[in-house]
Length: 259
Ligand SMILES: C[S@@+](CC[C@H](N)C(=O)[O-])C[C@H]1O[C@@H](n2cnc3c(N)ncnc32)[C@H](O)[C@@H]1O
Image 1 (cartoon, rainbow, N blue to C red):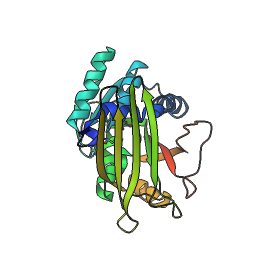
Image 2 (image 1 turned 180 degrees about the vertical axis):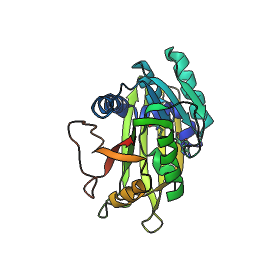
Image 3 (image 1 turned 90 degrees about the vertical axis):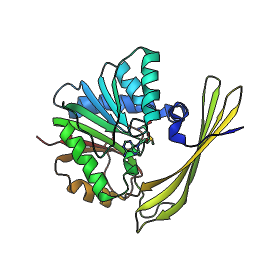
C-alpha cells in the first residue's frame, strides 16, 4: 500500500472522482451560452482547472479554451491529456486572484467549489474583478459552489465510488472543523484508488470559505461589474432557474459582465 501526499497532486484520480459531473457541466456551458449570451461563445477561460476535465471536454466540443491552475502538477497533467486526445488548448500556472491575459474571453467558468479556496472577502472580490476584466462586455461567468444554509448539517460526510476501466476511485469528503463566525470549514478530501496492481491513498485537509445566500449576495454587490442573470443547482437544468436563498445548497450562478 502506498501513501500518497495530496489529492490535488493526483489529478488523474481527481478527474475520475468528478467524471460524472463533466458532461452535465459542459452541456450547461452550452445551454447558458445559448440562453444568456448575445454573441456566439467561442473563447472560454477556466480558472482553477484542476486536472482539466472541462478543458478536454470543451476543447473537444470546438471551443478555444484557456485554463490555469495554481498547482503545476494539474497543469502538467492537463497538457498530457490534451496531447493524448490530440486536441489543443492553452494552459498555464496562475493564481485565481492574479492573472492577466492580452485578450478577452466570451465566457468563463469555475465549478466544484474551487472558488471557496479563496478564504477571505478581499481575495474573492479580487478574483471576481479579475474574471470580469478578462471577459468581453456581455460575457458570462458560470460559478459553481456549495452554499451552507443556516440550518444545514455542519459536520457532514459524503462518500462515492466511480469505476473507470480497471480503476476504482472512492472519494470521501468529511468536514473536520467548522466556524460560522470565521466563515471557514476544514474539509478532509480522501481518495482510495484501486487498480489491478495496487491500492493508493491520498488525503488532504483544505480550508474552504463558507457562504450563505445573503453572504454571496453581499460579495456580488461589491463587484458591480457583474449582474446575476440566473441561479441553478447541480442538476444543471437551464429550464429550471431557482432563487438565491436559504433553500439552496448546491449553486451555480450565471453572472453577466455588464456593458
Ligand atoms: C476542487 S479542485 C477543482 C478542479 C476543477 N475546477 C474541476 O472541476 O475538476 C480545486 C482546484 O483549485 C485549484 N486552486 C486552489 N486555489 C487556487 C488559486 N488561488 N489559484 C488557482 N487555482 C487554485 C487547486 O489547485 C485545484 O486544482
